[in-house]
Image (cartoon, rainbow, N blue to C red; front, side, top):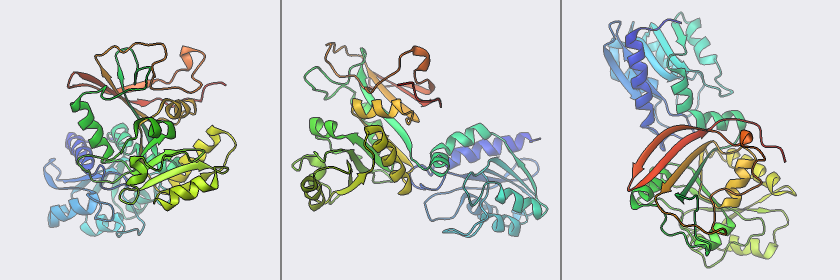
Amino acid sequence: MSFTPGESVAMARAIVLARRGEGWVEPNPMVGAVVIADDGTTLGEGWHKRFGGDHAEVMALSAAGPAARGATLCVSLEPCRHVGKTPPCTDAIIAAGIRRVVVAAGDPSPHANGEGVAKLAAEGIAVEVGLREDEAVRLTSPFRMLVQHGRPWMIAKWAMSLDGKVATHAGESRWISSEASRKIVHALRGRVDGIMIGVNTAIADDPLLTARPPGPRTAVRIVLDSAARLPADGRLVATAREVPVLVMVARDAPPARVERLRDAGCEVFQCDGDERQERLSVALQELGRRRLTNVLVEGGMGLLGGLFDARKVDEVWSFITPKVIGGEDAFTPVGGRGVKEIAAAADIDVEETSFHGGDVLIRGLCRPSAPPEP
């Protein structure tokens, strides 16, 4: 593969543009595109702005106009060749007279997976794949998780003291993190499809789980609640007709409790499985079936522990505040079975370390690995 300096610059720009669609385009992937002349001059650029709207390639080609003929298109994801909510991007590229297409990464979707590249090549267009591929794959990792594994990208978030506590031994936790950190969390809430907690957290904290101020998406509030214990007088149930609440219960949850939640406006989904981990897997697959792309997990320690035990956490946002809480019985962020040996611990590839109102945010990706031995 051979790429010019101008193509490398244009692809970096395409990836930056793609990020502008975050929270607006899901379950589609974020995509950016730039049309350049042979000398690297930008002729047009675009990004996928909204689900159901024009794709990045079409936006860039439209911006370039007649100048696109004989030019190069740099795009962060393989162009589509199927008819969805919009016509195939490959047709638009061919019609515009593009001479060369540089693609960062392939599209793993069943209706793509190399077919877009093959279509362009068959029309005599020079196609190269792999420029800034790692960046493009990371950009589309939630989309890839959904189409390849049928579940959402799971983001684990917690705020803890310097000694690793999320609450005192009495269960009091407001507020561990700073106002600046909480603003970041609200922005994150505003661009995900779902916010998940366990029922014990719902009972203890009575959270609202909404983004304030609202973001581009309204997340469904998901409570894992095997026995349908979610309190009828809590804020989640009280606002269920305004913002969706999905309660995921076991098959043997008491019918009267299930009907009480449904009557209050909650949606109740009954998960198959005798064991908690089985039901958790079923829950994630159901969320994938509903095309939820990003799910933020805000606790508690049992839910986060179960996800880490099953190696179903993809990304971590950990806010560490300079407080020491102490207490042998104080709560920690992650429970579950845990690992026997340090070598089996979940490894985090840190992408960001930043400071917010005195707190330290460590954000990173969980390195794929097999679940720990029981």
